[in-house]
Length: 310
Image 1 (tube, rainbow, N blue to C red):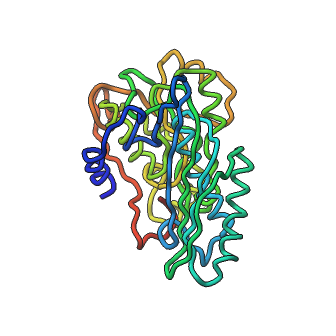
Image 2: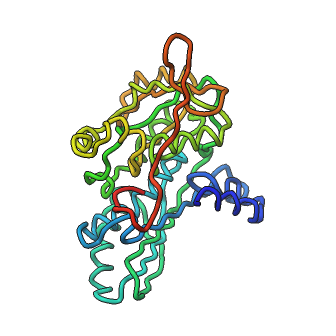
């Protein structure tokens, strides 16, 4: 539903020159007068019972998460975060106490990543806790989903899968890695991994109208995915392929820059997982020169979810 409705909105919303990148990327990009600097803005909402479970999870962790997931979008644009606008819809019972605990996590995340809280809104209602964050940042030349080039090397940061084990509440947005990549290479395209590695990879490639020859064996699998596979009935690779809320970055660079990055000392591990090809879709090599198409899977936001992924 989300992707089809976004397509509908793109057709209905007015295009204005001050909006350089609108609906359909990790963040919007807005021009700031006669300057090379650009304003980047993203927003995300998390809801009790869908994206977290307030009865069993720390409200401070939930507040931290609300900032961190937006920071991941900012990192995927290659931008520097500056300020946040925070809106809380609070259950009427114990509203003040809940707001205080949520804000402990929000303030912690903002202090860690040098983000100012510039404003927001508070309201109470008969429903569940909902947190909406709009995050602002700046960038000169934003990374987009739509600019991968045939022949590019494709990398992913960190390791994948098993976020339900706890990492989804305290993700580490790759802000510092994005800063390092800017100094070392020219990133052609990027996207953050929120709904699942294969699904978000496919979205980036589709936006660029290209595909990928994957090295399936190179996909970095987290320890949490290995442990989860012992009881889930799914393999570690299946968890890495489709679990949501990894909040890593997939990005593409030229072969020349790929060599530079492989030799560099980076803030976090990066792994080459394939090469961009002209034929759309996700492909893996089978035998000889033959290729088999593989299909993306990921997390779907539903009210019946277990709040492990989004």
